[in-house]
Length: 124
Image (tube, rainbow, N blue to C red; front, side, top):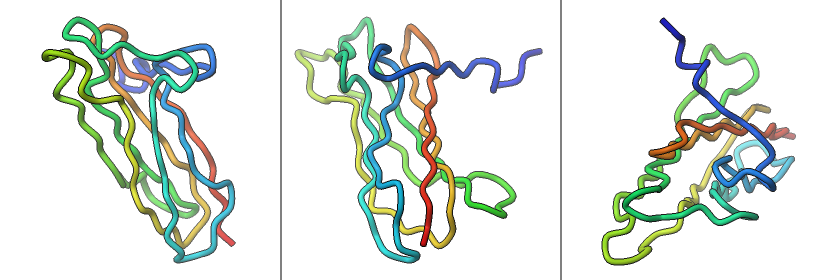
């Protein structure tokens, strides 16, 4: 039996329309709120039809010294293709970090599976 990690796909988001793009500062001040946005298809638009769509994006943070990643955001896109393209796969969350950590964004395409991307954020 395969572990879930074996299904995760990745790539350069500039050439692959399924990879989550993490929009966040590289450095933040401890305890200060910042905007964290995750989107799909920044360079190459992803379809949003009944046949082919991004169903969700989940965002986790693994801070230095942590035991496991913590889910910090989830964005769902249920209105794909129903009479038009109602949503684009993108979401924003207000986030505060106390320690340096890595943001992990995971997205699910109904045809092409699960995709991931990461970004480290240094806390000063």
